[in-house]
Amino acid sequence: MLLGTYAPKLDEKGRIILPAKFRDELGDGVVLTRGQERCIYVFSNEGFAAQHDKIREAPLTSRAARDFLRLFLSGASSEVPDKQHRITIPPMLRDYAQLDRDLTVIGAGNRAEIWSTEAWNEYYAAQEEAFSNTEEEVIPGLF
Image 1 (tube, rainbow, N blue to C red):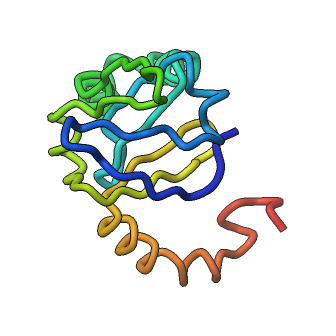
Image 2 (cartoon, helix red, strand yellow; image 1 turned 45 degrees about the vertical axis):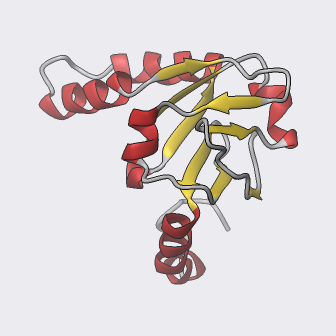
């Protein structure tokens, strides 16, 4: 399970070093793709295959499912970390997530997410109060 918040830097070649705590799960290879809220989702190869299998179960007749699948898969890129545990973020995904040098990488359970630090801070500030006020009805059985 991927957990925590990290602050790697994007180098001039568009690479980041995977957080050490993520390397066991992501060290053999990752799939990067567009995430929601303009972040980048980072899945293990197995995690991406499982996610794809779930998406494929949606009916082909559903326009929303087709749209989601197209955007999700057309932005996907398979990457293998180098010996320094760096992965390259393709330019198209860097543009999509508006990444600059300062990044925030979070563990989100079955995936990691790469955010521009500015976008993450804005998202966090906007969501923190709602998180604090979450009631049982939102996630039944949570508390």
